[in-house]
Image (cartoon, rainbow, N blue to C red; front, side):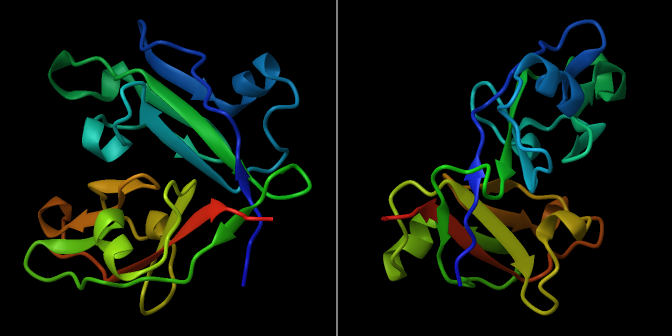
Length: 188
């Protein structure tokens, strides 16, 4: 079954100045009228150099579809300043002009000694996945709980590289078992 969804362009309205990096949905809408759907389905944040939030290592105050993205300098350790982030939102039709077609679910790894590694390059060796996925989604294999609601920390979670949950990053010492699927441009 196929969801149709698309991503907005990337937005970078703020620099990590005095108080932090504030990519709030409210301000982004004001500054980019009509470019963000009324009810986004998801938000993705990356540093300008392309690092995921997890890889950048900042303490994030907000990263959700209601508020947008906020990294506050005061939350960082050792007086570190936040990285400079950009954000984008995924939207459902009719906002989308080009749809996203989803692959089936893949579960190539179990959270063994190091964690759960659902890496795109490895998955491509055994499965037909488009060259440049636009989106990746991860859920637990047992209850289909979206990864973002498990409370676990992810080392990698992006459509370019795939999904990695490392046991050593978890307070429990062990990741859940996840499966992933990728959103690709539809060939229509």
